[in-house]
Image (cartoon, rainbow, N blue to C red; front, side):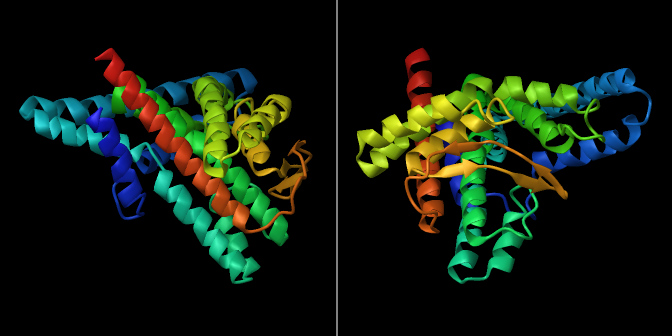
Amino acid sequence: MLLLISSYVADLIFGDPEWFPHPVRLMGRLISFLDNRLRGHSGWRRERIKGVILAFLVIGISTAFAYLFIEVPKRLDPFLGSLAWIYLGYTTLSTKDLRVKAKEILEKIEENSLIEARKKLSKIVGRDTQDLSKEKIIEATVESVAENTNDGIIAPLFYLILGGPILGITYKAINTLDSMVGYKNEKYLYFGWFSARLDDAANFIPARITGILIALSSAILLFSLSNFHSSLRIMLLDGRKHPSPNSGISEAAMAGALGIRLGGPSTYKGILIDKPFIGEEKRKIEPFLIGKSLNISLLTSLLMVLGGVVLQWAIY
């Protein structure tokens, strides 16, 4: 219970400084190393087999690392084991990092420096940002906050609650694999297929918890049951429209909570992808919506931690 709270608080305090040792960066290097050596032009069946090998190697090595990182210090001293637990748990979360990056974009928009805002945005989204209007920058930022509330906060918390940092690191390995090779393009269509499907499975339950908590958080922050109903309604109506079976859930819940429309056509590496719209245009797109989405995201994370503490207390 205290270990979970400590990991969450550590993330709120320290975030993700680039100079700090971080397991996810090590995972990224491992994936790049294996990608360069496994992937090749050898037919779609062999590419799929190689993709499965990649996933099992990365997940196996990451999980084994997490186990040893906690167990070795724990056998020397239980207190050292607790510190290792807190550190690894903290590295699976990105609550502060998401807030910092989204606020940087907001600051540039408020300074009317759209070129800099686009550059900042390009660090947290996969789409092309160089030609986005002010409104589209805001929409893309809100979408990213919604999606990363699940991928970077609620899903890791879900697995930390279930199985501690070992399971949390296992999830981060799956999620990092998807972010690096889980693309439906010519390069990774077959090689990254298994990683993408694993990520879909790993995020299925957390994404729906995220959607419900976003709806609940919006109602609490705005003192309005209508926000709760609107968020849930849009989540149920539009959540499945997204190409991803999970990302659309949190994005739709956020769109309903804020009374805006997200999604629509976007360009990725010069290729136009005609994604469906999510939500309803009840209000004008304005910069303050980024701050509102961050407040909803933060309260969503707090509710998840509270739920985890209550669950662990009830069990133990």
